[in-house]
Length: 282
Image (cartoon, rainbow, N blue to C red; front, top):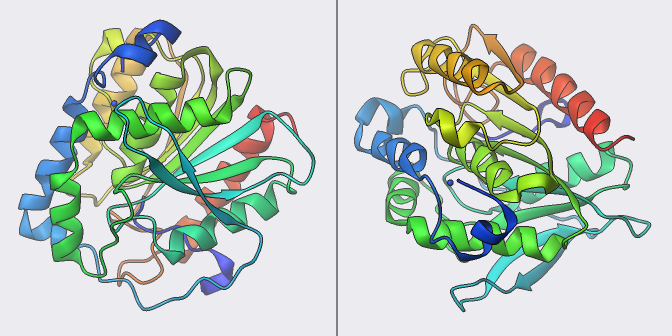
């Protein structure tokens, strides 16, 4: 991996603790809108099929956790070296929780000095795509209700006293924001890479923590106009958004993609890591 960075083209929310336990999901328009992008040939072709890779780390472990819909959910957990209530939820991009995501989660864990529990959440119930056609099908076929149940289950797994941040790419970028909304007062920060923003201002008003977003000016899905609207809506909601824009395309942080931009990727990662260290008070 180029300079150790795999930030794959990875990469929904009215909250309140009681609502988060009972609502079928929340506002899901953002996720639905992003899923419809998979119908577009230019969007699919912007994602090169990932190169074969086998994760060989030994720090993380598979876990299973409960969800309100009664179906177990899965994840890959890097447990902090010392017991802590800090949790970083990592949300996959559209291929699923593959070995690349495990590798990136390990990198985040190590760069956070092993002081944060890093949980890569499996949003596809152990289904993993190896090509863009299957990835598009998995993303479009994911039930909004199930996605919400998995996110709430991951938040519940962290525990009621947990301080939770989230990060995600592409599909997972939008999920990261929605997860932050669902986490309510437990949310301490959201990092999203070129994911679909929440557009409902009233929903954004429930956000309890700052958002750091990375976007590409050449992105034909999450366009500069979409980012402009996100900034406007966040300002209207009275919330903090730092939107960093690069002269790059969708998936610019994916080193297996021909449009990979190493300079933008490294700059974004530096900012993401600093943001996470700040919100986790490391």
